[in-house]
Length: 266
Image (cartoon, rainbow, N blue to C red; front, side, top):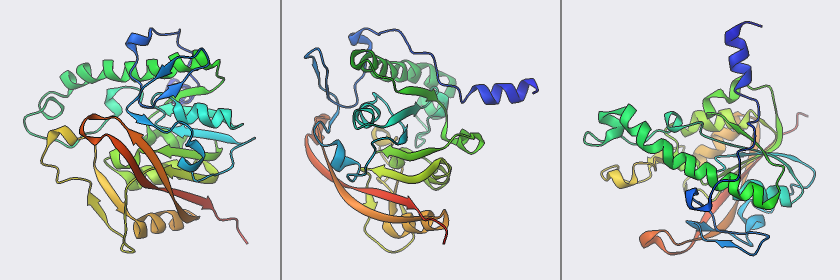
């Protein structure tokens, strides 16, 4: 094996568990109750609702890949449901894409933006490892860009993608890369879906406000079905509910969860 091949293979290896971080150095995306009685308030709260969030898909005894794990709530919930779980997230800020504006660092000085955003990602990962230690979890972690998935030989029974697709600049290619890892099903949980049979993709906002530069697209029901049908999956929809305490958006929200099941050959 040459050096380039070895480096590529190494990117797929699970990382060594991080030491227990300080709670003050964590950014929690989801609220969670810990075994020691500590309750952590995150941006979103789906405590007690994990099963409906993933469309009541059975996970016990299955291998699960949690894409975009953030603080790990879905990964840890899948583990508690009896799954063997691998979680993943961006390696660093170089894997993040935002809608570009002429007067923001992402466009003007990418290196400066990466230096600014990397500490935030570390705090998000700290939240994962803080919870991992507190739960005495066995979830393994691979920090890997979605673009690398086609080069990975590993497969999972179920791939879970929670509230992520709308934040990807190229969701169609990403869905294809993600689906390639799923032997049984892909669950795209709690994501906006355009209620149309047309195969369309709309901007998730009018792209005029840099505050919302991380939210790219809303895909239609017809487009999701076409993408997954092309990849050998059938599609069904359920409704997921989550609560948020994020700024002006406080309250409970309902969004579709997409369950794509791989069709077995006749």
